[in-house]
Length: 327
Image (tube, rainbow, N blue to C red; front, side, top):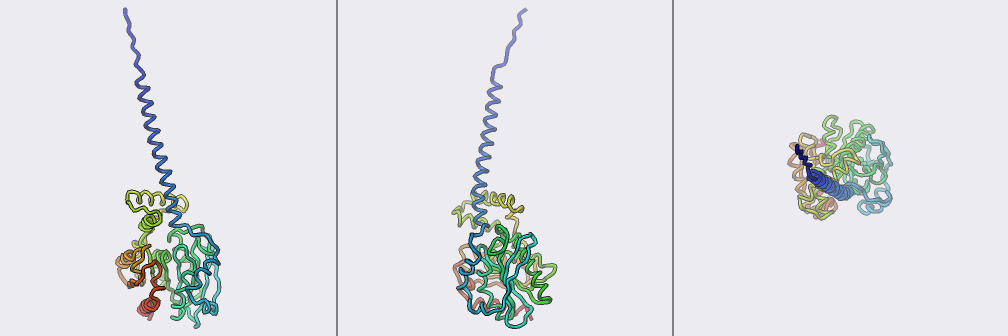
């Protein structure tokens, strides 16, 4: 009896080896791509949220020429410290107008600014008979917090300041005037204000519509990347970095969605030549809000300079807006 036994060759072993190489190659590509994405996403995240280092006193010296320092020195004022709902301290300065007014306007500064960068608006409201509160947003000046959250936590801080003013001046009128990120924060806060209506009006100067678009603008300008096929992944990884550090998705923060059913009066302001945040964003916000709104597009070519380049006209627009809602 002849018994023939045939053994399979080593082909399956070669197949297994090839399969492993393919899997390892794919994994290596995934790791490399994600590592690069997180690296550049972190750069974008920092450019969008990290505040420049510097002493709080440096901010005062930087902006003191934008307001009447001698007049400011003569005003009755006091420094205030409150605790954020998120546990860090918030520092501000409360300035009283000459008469015994219960009314107050809260000024909210832009990213990388401070209470002193919005002090230029104070005289306009003091003359109108309003007290003025200026404060350092989280991560800025003397306030706590490690970085900006582009309005997400800042809206809660603003709400704490509104509560503080309301507790000190019961039945007084409260207004909020924000610039840049401060304006965006004010828009987010307006959604919170729907129930208790503590804020009677908002002045929205040079805001953006939503954080996703803001990140895209930052990618275009700061990194010089405009191809959507590259921009989208970068903003995605910036969101992932923020999710890890701050526990929320940046791209879900939107003012244009927040204000659609807000009835509180708003004056929208923007410089028509703003190259950092286009005026079309403010026009889109104005269109999104259904009622109680006014729009002023100022003749200026720089971000946040609508007031500085058009002082008299700016004051007239704000005063007329306030007169139209405060009887």
